[in-house]
Amino acid sequence: MPEIKSRDIAIALDMYGCPNRCRHCWLGHPSNKRLSEQDFRWAATQFRNYVRRGEKQPFINNLGVMSWVWEPDFTDDYERLYELEAELSDIKPYRFELLSIWRLARDEKYAKWAKKVGPDTCQITFFGIEETNDWFYRRRGAFQDNLIATERLLDVGIKPRWQIFLTKKIIPEVGKLLKLIDRLKLSDRVKSLGGNFDLFMHTPGPDGEARELEHLRPTLEDTRSIPSEVIESSKKHFNVEKLWYTEGELISQILTEKEDFPYAYFYPKILCFYIKNNWDVFSNMGTLEPWWELGNLRTDSLQSIFDNFESNRVLGLETIFTVSVKELAKRFGNPKSRLVYNNKDDLESLFVGRYCEQVYLNGR
Image (cartoon, helix red, strand yellow):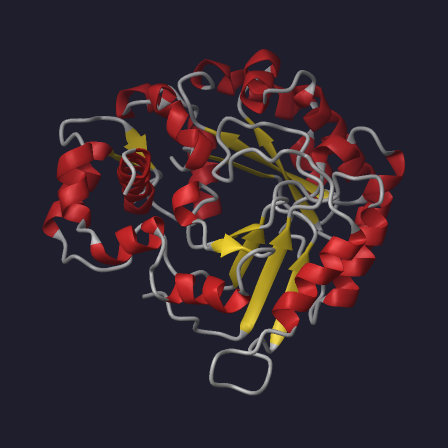
């Protein structure tokens, strides 16, 4: 059972959704319904005042509060919400080297404000050149937004970092991205800011929306045409000697290693509870799919939500703590497959998702 190991806890309330509907998103897609400042204060108060059964003092020692789940600052009142996060939190508001790319491309003041509050480096995600990239974002203009955002970050002294997702669609376009990086002189311009331009590639984690992308997952043979400079910069970023493994290799590992629980989803460094705009609550030890739902903050007590987490009372947690991953590998895996995954955890999360989806749809 995932006992709560620390009383330093974060919550993230989806107050305004996201401009994108990315096909790789493990969190799924929000409704973009807006919540109010009163809603935000109410949610924070529920956690701050929570007293565990049998105790007399509030359970949480240090509370971190975020007003977003998908993309930070995707709202006109982003400065006010940042101030609220700081007011309601016991720590400096989280930034995670993320900013709103959508807002960077549309609000000239935003980059200057972001420079004051952080981060020093901002990650920008690419799925390919324009048409391919926008298809993955499900939003026309996303590629151009990435380029404008890159320029505006550099203009204020924030270092851009480019993340590339590996699919069959991007492999023919990697060379064009490298030429674009050269044309924009990103290595020299980031170096002038005191850093090194970070470019890295990895496969989509097969969670949430990304399970629908498995038909675009490349084989090991497909990856051999990727330019060596992308391979080497990615190895450096992740500090690994090998970037990906075939499904067959990983299944062999799963079937021969000692079986440990949990698998695929490990206890996070900071336990965070995600609250969707309909008040459904999830933890960051899983996805936002229905089999991970812990309860609803408006209709269920926080005690029951914490109990559901700690006692594996939801299908997702029950699976990773009690169902044999070896049996899942035999049931859902292909030992002859040459498809590539970053690591065993990614492949195991795919098996968990397929298993939970089947059980959930069949009505457990």
